[in-house]
Amino acid sequence: MKTFLFLQMTIFILTMTTLTHAARLKDITNIRGVRSNQLVGYGIVVGLNGTGDSKSDYTNKSITRMLDRLGMKVDGKEAASKNVAAVILTAELPPFARSGNRIDVTVNTLGDSSSLRGGTLIQTPLRAADQQVYAVAQGSMLVGYSQEGVHETVGRIPNGAIIEKDMGNQFSGHKMFRMTLHNPDFTTAARVSKRINMELAGKYATAIDGATVDVVSPSTYEGKGVELLAVIENIEIEPDTRAKVVVNEKTGTVVIGEGVKISKVAISHGDLTLKVGGGAKSSKDNDRVIELEESVNVRDIVKSMNRLGVSPKDLITILQNIKAAGALQGELEIL
Image (cartoon, rainbow, N blue to C red; front, side, top):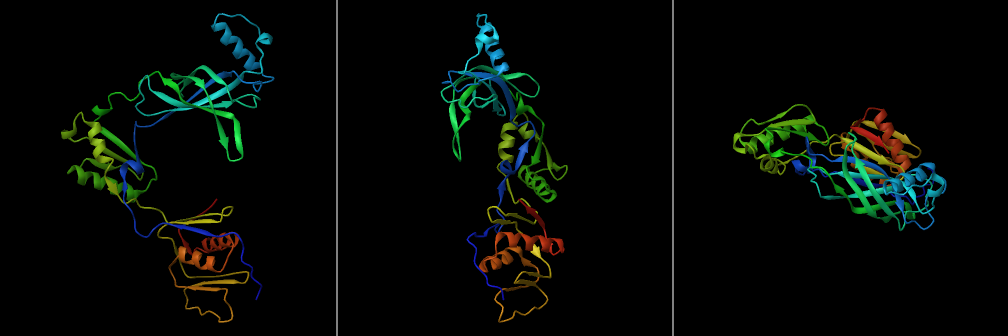
């Protein structure tokens, strides 16, 4: 028998509990029309301590245009400054945004600026995909950090943008609402429809497909869409899930979904033998034999391999071979 050395890397096993827990509809669905929108803008940051863009024509042009709007005429060369940086702004407009509310803004360097620390963003319009201005941003930034330490080419302005337009008007008057599942599944969609109808005591919800459930507003909730959704979103159901195994070789993590089974199979990998079903007998002289019953959980196989010190790389290879043999009853995803 080959000499076996336990590896330092541990195989961590994360499994879904065999007891299914109920989830609120608000946590597993979206309501059509209730969504955020991405905003983007181009602007300049001033007040940098010599860490701005060194050679950037568009930065100089931006400075020139800004000063021109402020009543000062300068050419591009006069406007050049290492204390200024061109930036791209990103933000998220929440559903039902109201004029005057504030949202956070992320600021990213566009040129070769080495740091945005200490800078101030000059008033910048933020546009959505329809090219309409929905917010205006301005203010001093907080410099972000990465795992390696200071990351000074990205800044954030908490509450740095003011919303200019109202969004989502007259939502309460809707007579029909469409719900979409985060994880499409026919069984889950059918359960959602059934539970809503039970709660509303009538045929008001219909599952259109595996991802969509339409709800017609009952007459008792006419003009009360908010109250209706408040009732619906707190309904609890048990979402159905696919049998799936996800493995990450880099971290040695194995995530096993509920219901993943192994059919009758035998695998030899190095000095390790895996036998599932078939009445196989283990040799007393070989402690590298795993013998399990047919239709056993993948979780049991992984735990057995973990006890023998099987490396994540070997575990992934074994699971791939079991899947290729058609014995893994579920999906296998390698990250």
